[in-house]
Length: 304
Image 1 (cartoon, rainbow, N blue to C red):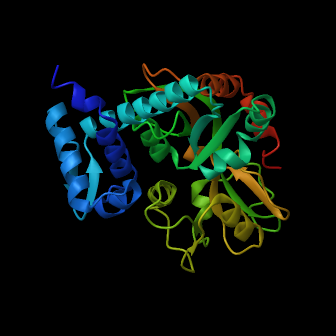
Image 2 (image 1 turned 45 degrees about the vertical axis):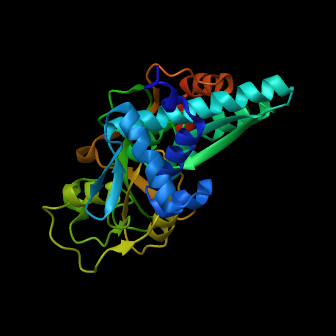
């Protein structure tokens, strides 16, 4: 019995959630109002109780171990259940929080109709969007930081359940006056020598485009770096370069997009934690997203 009680200690769980959010002892200690040594001691004690290392060092950074990810999810769920239970005992009204993790493109071009309907029909729920790219969105669900995630994830973690929402081709976006704009489709070889509009280094889309175009001759000018689909598309529409984008992206005035069959398709997936009991409002949002008509969602953004 003694080995179980400390795991359920709210102070230990609260300390570990703060650490899992920050992955930094100093910042996490400030969040929970403890000294750094006191926070370190609580997390060490929790690790001893569960019998596993909860974090590890990766270079100069700290990261959660698999056990740490599971404990973080458990801690967040336990703290939320405790708050709900106390509010019910006190007769206090409590707005249900629904946390959705998704990338900028998904929010802008895919999820809008479902989220608008959810906000209209769930006045007592608070939707909390997290902007995370596909793998990071999935990780947020694994850690219990989000109830649901939507993103492009090729290898779904085994702890998650995934359902396909939309399959869309990869396209090249350019100005309407570009030499390739008259074509219905574009080959990779056609992009030889073109100046590219790319995501910043370190982003998965930048790495993917780099691999796909690695065999082509270098462009006449260095690439333009733009953070986010809207800016990439805006610069492509101005004629400053060409950008490889997902087919659901809405196009600004002056821009067109053409599919590149050699780049294939990407699939947006809805994910939630296997075996987790979703709060009622989160469950209803999941049902709305599963009913999403991807063909309708992508039609408004389809390249012309």
